[in-house]
Length: 276
Length: 271
Image (cartoon, helix red, strand yellow):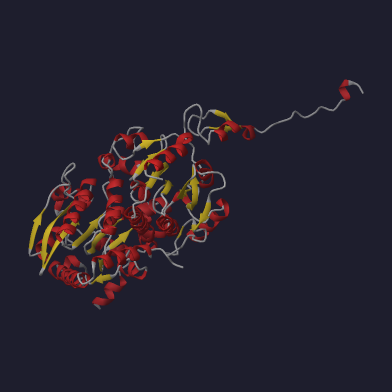
């Protein structure tokens, strides 16, 4: 066969997205295995990308120690809420199908460096990590479980705030979760709050801010009111570092900023100081 | 006929009544509800918020600690009071006064009327979120009776920051919501002018909230709204507050805080 008759082999094309992750912050290309090994922290700019609740559980707990509790508690639709884009109940069901989670917080018992704890981890992918009645109920039950088992409670927050679609019932979850935390504290048990990107609105103004220790991830957005609302109120542009973890620490509301790769060891160390 | 008018009011109409410039404000309540009032200033940490005030008060034969948001009358007073939008200092002052109430064995009466907690950069810097969160935690275990009255606007976390209690009363034309109808409309409908629809959908009126089990009692208002007869409106609040205090004072403190926990735990539990 002469050379011009030989069929041309298609070049092997490896899709870019299979090999490279793009850092959402610096837009740099990072090899996917590096990105995964670094738990989605950019080696170039130290951006901490949001984790799903299951990824966070893997990061923080001893392998195989996590056992989910309250899986049967899911969302409620007390207002039978509908807006132009459809019914809340349909959106919530679609979110459950997509994420495989029943609510915006995953709760369970686990061990952190052999220390038994009760853990709650929020997931921003579940309706923006919003605080619905199911979310509040899971957190309350997790706190009560910690009291029952005499274990520390750890909650990792990632939330835009209240879930508007549940209206006033969502607002009441702020009071409900704080009441449960207050009881845990009365029982003398530690409560560690970890604030990840973002922790704002009704979640920052309830259980996320009342930790024995408030621990933040680098550069996480932490605040009460939204930036745009504040800019409209004060009619001024806000500085870039406004409402970052670093800003929050400088103003005295966070104990420590801990890089993701050190978080598990940091929690274990603090729990040992707390007598566990 | 008059009754029919009230029944015809839409949630958006009720929002307008709740925000009416002549609606009784905390100054009116202090004047007409209290036989005596000693204002106590400052949070002992930073300053004295004028958007949330409090002190010792005598209501009928009851000595209490009264706290409440403050809306002004007219521009000057409203600027001083920041239109009833409290700062972290306000919530911390409220907590300080509630601690005194517990120490002196006085019940707490909390009057809620705010568009929301102040969304300013100074408020963020001084920990608006922490101030509210801490109050929620603290009020859930406070060892003295707490009667909350939502008098006008119950604006989200800014309202809830002084609204955890044993009995939650609400005036007939007050509203209580997780977000303002305008805010909800601009986020979910992407159109602020859909506020009337949002007001309906959010179920923010006293009737709806009673149905949802969020409030315990609706305090009737004079026909046309509390602003049409301030004295009568405040008298109805006084009657309701005193009746509730009389009941709550009979309950042992340990039982009281247990019941308060049960009350808030049950909110949003539907199964």
